[in-house]
Image 1 (cartoon, rainbow, N blue to C red):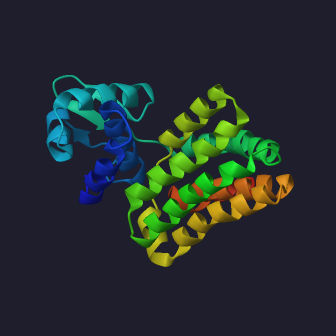
Image 2 (cartoon, rainbow, N blue to C red; image 1 turned 45 degrees about the vertical axis):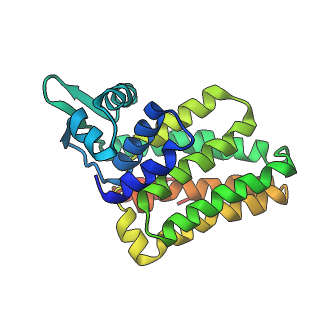
Length: 234
């Protein structure tokens, strides 16, 4: 894993359990591409890199196995699972069905006092892009969206969305960063909060459709022309 993975991990450890910190660092590394599909990693090697014992790494890897992000290889370690274009299409389609309507529903009801903390999270996403910290970007993006969905008071929904997000491999982040398109995507989080603050539910829902569409049309690698034409919000 890249050095920025370790830096991000150190920040996370201050506010999470060790198992959760390791798990989130590994999720971010996998999703960002620092740990690539097909690669095999051992718990001791990861532990040495993160400055922890192999035990919390193995515990975190059990969570990632259940989430389908890695598979356990007896006496070898853990292999990062590969995800097909068809899988990515299916995940994006389900997210389009779940997240935008919920954002539309909660827009009139997010308490005004909850907007400043969400603004801080949105700004953390922008700042991660500014410092070219892709792992930090992935983690800040995850926290922002799950924090927003908490206002739906539906823990089942939050769990499903978290799992779907974890299964998405954002393979095109570095080129997007270099082209400036990732900065535009990061800014959409502030735009979304502007719409929520204005209580514009339909516009917030539409923006979420476009935002999720980036995951497939821009971030996650090549796809068929037919799939691109059929994607909501693309």
